[in-house]
Image (tube, rainbow, N blue to C red; front, side):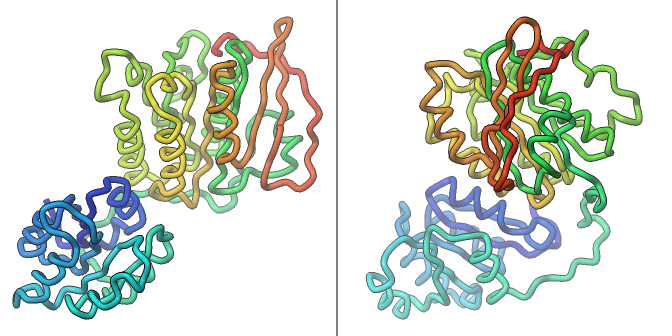
Length: 356
């Protein structure tokens, strides 16, 4: 399971805490083990000898205080730094920290900087010389521009799309959202930027430019036909955690600069608002996220108004599309990167408008 890298153990019965920690901790430096209860954590500590243990306090079978006491009174592993992850007020457990000989604590919710600083404090970063430990990550081009690929939108945004931008494209069925997403994708491919497309609707191959790429262009696009992921009989694929884990694993293998979730609203029937917002929040912690621009397209519908409102609040750029008489309009409705923005509505025709 583990290679020659040291490992860090995360013991917490809340899956999202373990998932977030795995995204924060660099896979170049450490392997990450997880345990959902104290007993499992103790057994893994003995077996794998982690460089550091992060542990919740309230866990089944064996709580964090018991786990810490077990580790600190077991000679073979008592040297391992033990850090509590807790949402309890400091005064509530300060005396117990000394009693069980814990090394430190990290308050929930914690930032990636907080966790990294704690690791830096208690663990010396390993130097790995094995060629097998080096992942073939293709780094982005420093001088590359990041525009949308649509002249109207690029004009309204008045500059490059900033790193770590989340873009929401919304509009009714037939307003050209998928057409717009393809322009965003093709602009990246032309600039030799690694791009991922996750399409929750089966594309029309005769109209879609991604099926007409040259062999040299194909190496810059990774395409997932996710149309089956939201089918009624596709359990567990429609589970939004599966989708995130799939994307996260892919981002760990390659440094993507553009990621598109096309027709994302196809999953709204299966996912709760809390799950959707949590998914988007986790996407800000994807591997190599410092280089990424992510785009979502969704169908506007009266039944989705409340959900769309909440999505707008977690996005950095909003684009509204409408369709009329064979043409569609594109309007940048907000952008956190631009203090002054041209919100004039533009009209444009497209052969790909039937996509959405």
